[in-house]
Length: 500
Image 1 (cartoon, rainbow, N blue to C red):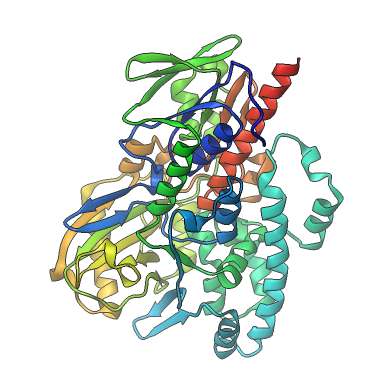
Image 2 (cartoon, rainbow, N blue to C red; image 1 turned 90 degrees about the vertical axis):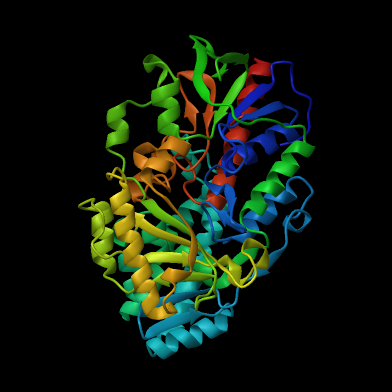
């Protein structure tokens, strides 16, 4: 992309101010487009919004800062660095895994110390981990330097020699479950390496081993935190967008995408229609197609979506305590049956019997997110999509996780001074999330790369899609890349029209 001057027909609307929408807006503005981001809420961020209550500042969604190189590369496109917008600290230990009341393991930041930890748990596994990470590193480079930047529009994208060679040599089509078990026998270590899969996409048996790249990101690239919270990233990208001339319209709900047989003509928001030459929809893909477009101009029908395997939704709790408790910044409660929980998400969707869950306690790192002497807790339980969401069900799981946490952290129920829950109904209300999903599509082989919903609408040549339901997939780094890929495709289309 460059700063070439565009033709007059260069008005672009970006629907949604989440990571993918902000990223797309920045790349388009850099290329000379007149960009307006239309956002239904009163602030940017999408799932990465924040809120404050009683002196606590809560990140509403993403809480893991992995793959720092993706953020560095993003800002470098504009002559900036993350340090221009926020201060990063590396967490050490990276996180804690609670296997039982008396068995908890802190994962060190130093890769050599992780080798020692593995060796202590399973003799010989340190050498196995070295081999595992060497292969995972190659997958990471293959995926992040090539695969994730493909628009997923043609099978020819896979025809480069390097890509084909990498795919064949690295056995990316083997399942994560089988791949991990080639190297390790300890249930503890297997569970530790499989956790990103359950929390971010699919059962290990259904996930291609390509995603061992997440383990490489974990061990070799580290776990980081932007002081002030994850929303600092949103603030940084928004500031960058404003400096590039991007306009933001908050509290603007898109009610309809105006079209003719020739393409998109504008957006109807808050009862008013505004003309645009292009639209990038970074809102929920299903919602955009099924609710904002006429039926004859939708690329996919409802039955297409019904067949899709969704990544989990989440039951979240935002909790403020008036005391400190024994936690690290990131904590994984694996004191339950991993297989049963995964089955109750994917095979027989239901509210889980005895779920695993995650607790973020950013006040361990950041004094700004809680009053002095207090603790900020974010609790996440992965659950199936399309479940009946009721206050009584939320209360049941709140009691369950608080009681389980008390066994390892000490009692704190009487010290709760703030509590808010968030689940399916909220995801639907706030983000029009299909089936109340939190993470988009499951990372199965048949929903990877070109098998994801397309980044373009073949029936409307000036409508493009970005975000977690299209390429490259869910997560903060992929969403940032998704915005770049969508913007690149729009720019190519625009230049082709300008020269035709």
